[in-house]
Amino acid sequence: MVTDEQYRRLMKLLKKEKTLINAADKAGMNEKTARKWRDIGKSPSEVKAEHAWRTRKDPFEDVWDEVKEYLETNPGLEAKTLFEVLQRKYPGRFSDGQIRTLQRRIKIWRALEGPPKEVYFFQQHKPGVLSQSDFTHMKSLSITIAGEPFPHLIYHFVLTYSNWETGSICFSESFEFLSEGLQNALFELGGVPGEHQTDRLSTAVHKMNHSEEFTQRYQALLNYYGMAGRKIQAGKPHENGDVEQRHYRFKKALDQALMLRGSRDFKSRTEYVKFLKELFKQLNAGRQNRLEEELKVVRRLPKTRLDICKRAKVKVGPSSTVRVSHNTYSVHSRLIGETVEVRIYVSHIDIWYAQRCVERLPRLRGEHNYLINYRHIIDWLVRKPGAFENYRYREALFPTSNFRIAYDLLKEQRPTRANKEYLHILYLAAYEGETQVNEALKYLIEGEAIISKNTIKERLSLGDPPLFTEVAVATVELETYDALLCKAVI
Image (cartoon, rainbow, N blue to C red; front, side):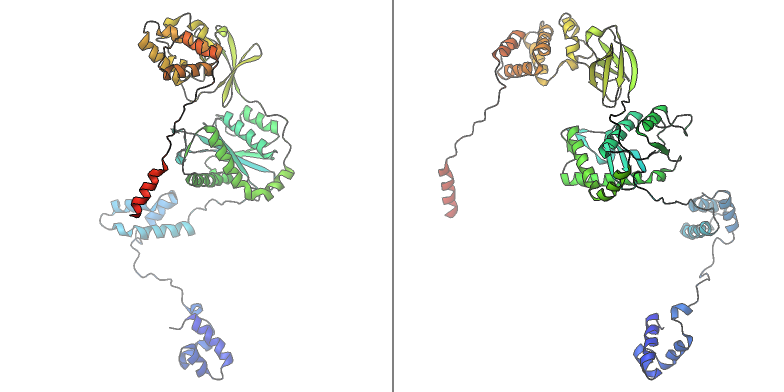
C-alpha cells in the first residue's frame, strides 16, 4: 500500500530524475504503481473513500423510532434510562454490553437533530468597569486555630479585567459580612470600579419575594460608593465566572502554600489573616501592569466607610445582662432596668446609652453562648457570696487558670468560706489589676502558701516584679569526653 509520504517523494523525484523507473525505484515502488499515482495526481488519503457503511447490524434499528419519540418529548433523558426501558419492554433482546451502542447513537442524534445548546458569549472586559464577589467555604482545607477546627468562609473580591483579588474571613453569607468584605476590598484597592456583580445571595442582596430587586441596605451600600449593581440569573453560576474560577485557583494556591508551610494550624486568627494577606500579595504580583490600567480609571473612595450595622433596643435584665442574637452579654449593673441600644457589627457589638457608647464587646458566634465580665457584677456578688455556688455563668468568673486553681484550693482548705474568700480575690482583680493578682496567685500556688485576700494584698503591696523560673545547667567535665575518645581509638 502506497503512503502519502511515498506519493510526495515520488512527485518530487519525477521533477529531478530523467526516467520514471528511476523515480519509482527511489520512492520505493514499482514502475506500474508509480505511473498509476502520477496519472491520478492525488495522494492516497485524498482518493480514499469515506467509510459510510456499517460493519454490523444496528441492534436498535427496529426500536429507534420509540427511542426517538422519548427523546423528542424529553431531550434530557439519559441513554442508560432509555436502555433500561427497552430491556424491560423486550426481555432478553438487549444485553448489558450494548448500552454503549445506544449511547453513541443518542449522542449523534443530539448533535444533529436535538435541541440547541446554550451558547456562552465570552465578554471583553474593560479596565475599571466590573468587579465580582462571592463567598467560598474553606472547610475542605482543614484550617485549625490553636489546634481547634476553624470553620469559616472567605469573602472573595475580583476585578474582572486585571484579575486582581483579595478576600477576608467571614462566618456566614450575610449582608454584614458582604458589606465588611466589600468595603475592605475597595479600601485595599484604593478606588471604586463602576459596577459590582454578585450571585443571588437572597438574604444578603436580594429581596426574598422580589429577587429582581436589591435590598434597601445593599442598594444604600452601592449608592454610597457610586457603583451600579449587577446580578446573575438563577442557576447560572458561570455568569459570575471570574470569581468562581478564582475560588478554585485561590484555594488550590492556599492548599499548596499550607503544604510548604508544613502545618495547617495557626497560633491565632491574626497569624492566619497575615498568612492570607501574604498569599494574595503573591497571587497579585503578576497583575500589576493591568492593575495600573484599572487604577487610572476607577473613581475615588469616599473619605470614610459606610457604618453598617443592625440596631436593636434591649432592656437590661435584673441579672445585668442583655440578650442579643440568641446570645447573652453582661453590662455594668448600673444599667439594670434601663433600655439600651445595641449596634451589631460583624466582629463586635456596641452598647449605647444616652447617646454614648458605654461598652464594646466581641460578637459571639452561634447561639446560646455567653460573655460575662466579672467586673460588671463583682460589687454585688461580694455582697451575695451564696449566689456564686450555683451561678449559671460561674465558669466565666475564672479569668485565668490560676484563679480556677486558687478556688479549688480554697474549697479544700476552707470549704465553708471558699466562695466568699474567692470573690474578695476577684474583687481585688477588678480594682487592683487582674495581671497583678494573677501573678500573686501564681506565686502562692507554686510556693504552696495559704491563699486568701490578705496574702494577695501582701504580695501586691510588695510590688515585686514577675517571677521567672531559674534554670540550672550543670558544668560539663571535658575529661569525660577525652576518656570516651581514648576508648574509641583503642
